[in-house]
Image (cartoon, rainbow, N blue to C red):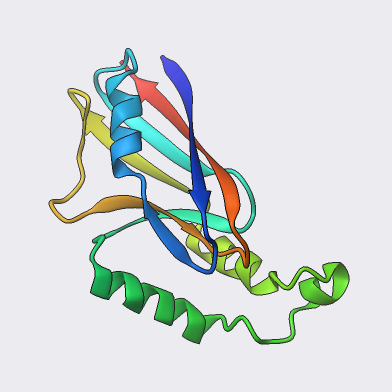
Length: 138
C-alpha cells in the first residue's frame, strides 16, 4: 500500500533548519500503514531533507559549515543567468539531497534518541515550502 501526504511550512531561507519530525510522525500515525518506510521529499530545488540533533549549538555549526563549504558571495553562473542571487542555494540543496527514507514499525519511526528529521531551506528569501511524505508498507 502507498499513501501520499503533504506538509506545508513557512521558512525564512538562508540555511534555516526546521524540525518536521512531529509532522512526519503525525502523517504516519494518520495513515492506514502499520509498518514500512516513509520517504520525506522537499519539493523545489533550493531545500533539502536530512536528520540532525536539533540543538542550537549544532544548528549554528551546521549553518557555518555550509557557509564555509559553499559561500553565498561567490560568482555563480546561475546568478548571471537568472539574476536571483541564489546560485549557492541550488548547489547546497543538491549536495544535501531533497529526500530521506525513514523506516517505521507499529507506526513508530526508527529514529535515534537525538535524531530529528529536518528541512533545510537554503534559498535567499522566505518561502512557502511543500514537503511530500510518501508512506509505503503494510
